[in-house]
Image (cartoon, rainbow, N blue to C red; front, side, top):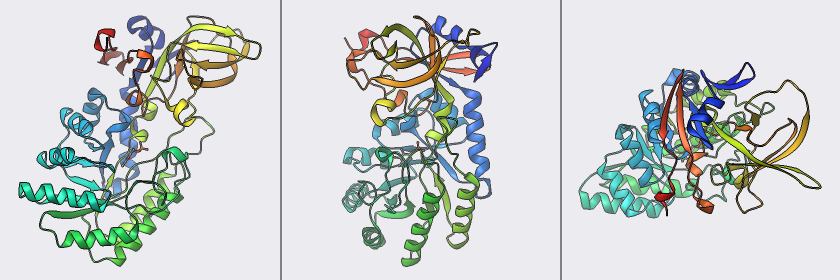
Length: 404
Ligand SMILES: *Cc1c(COP(=O)(O)O)cnc(C)c1O
């Protein structure tokens, strides 16, 4: 994705062409970038060839998941809907893990029937529920237990999950109790220790700490885990000043861990696979000057992309065409929704805009469309996938008749 002759272009297609053909707001993904991300991810950890389970919640588009499946990835799901979507995309159930603190008996039933690789349980009650259902089916079920390693991921507090005060996983004491319980169960096959300490992690040190905690607890108990599921959370660069996660050091720490604990590593990356593959193309509806600000009112809003409103996340905003004449302004980019938090960013030194200009919001491939809603009864945007000069609609714009 770059400017070619001053026009922002995805692979071989300009944003202007997409907007003309599909209208705005439109989510647009690059196949090439997806391919690159997956190849790099595999390369970073190639010495122990992990099972990579794409975190479906980051992007639930069935056509995009199909492409991801074609690269050999499995899925990490957190609800029955996501499990159905992963299966619909053709992902092998033996490559699916099911996470989440509140799996209902209906969801557990479905997961057992589909013979997925692992149900990663997050409490004693859940283990008992799985056992009860497995007993009724007279089937031994493969499970993991999610450990809360009490490790600070050094990320936004809203997307931190591995600290004692977070609802996720169980502490070491409960973990050991559950291991004992599982050993005496005829219907639980304890295969995995899982963790996931948070999202948008850019420092390798929390991962090192997490591995040390896992190592210690395994040394305390006499159990061989066939799988160690390290979760996802690898961060991406939302702006050029972003620190970059040191994959080399993370890889080294895992290799060291594997010397003492032989097991298959599972990862559950979401953002690092799809985050930078997507942009949101939108249009300036009005420019509204007030005493203190220049508001740029876009046709995209917090219902299309909620990350800035939800966690104060910052997404780079770019013009679709770079102008020759250098006249810069400070703009506040907002959506039309009736909430003051419906704001994307304030940009200083942005090239002068006019109404109907096209705008690009960057790095929205993860937690963009998947967190979208119909708030203010706004239809959900179109999603398209670019492969070279080919454009494929992977989800049509929602129609008013879908909800009226
Ligand atoms: C959200 C989540 C992931 C994916 O996190 P990313 O930051 O997108 O890599 C992985 N595992 C679990 C259990 C999750 O909840």
